[in-house]
Length: 156
Image (cartoon, rainbow, N blue to C red; front, side, top):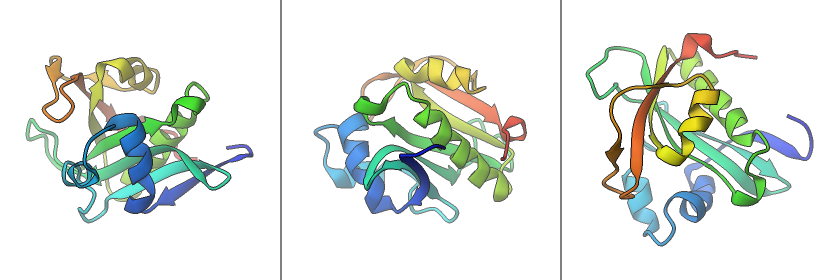
């Protein structure tokens, strides 16, 4: 990643503001925390900073696939890029950091419930459809479950 951007591991507190701005505007902050796997052992939050500001985020945690699909599944949640920085590849950088973290901790595959507006982003990053479109209970927006084998992620 080139200047002025820095890819970093973040604390839960550091991801909250961008989660609210992009993903859950108007929702009580505590609801966002409770709807995530933020406190599971192995969970991590990655982001990109410009200067001191967090401008892109994603969270990853060990979480079995909803179908009951075995060992090594990790769930990607709360991917967001500040609208002023969309289209610069920052989401892909955060996605790669999350995949590396999962792989370094025994992960073999990832899954996510992607907003329909983000499906193209995930597909460009090697993710595949996994099921039918559904409406997320928290956001009331259409989503699609997607999966990605971690073995195909370049870990450099």
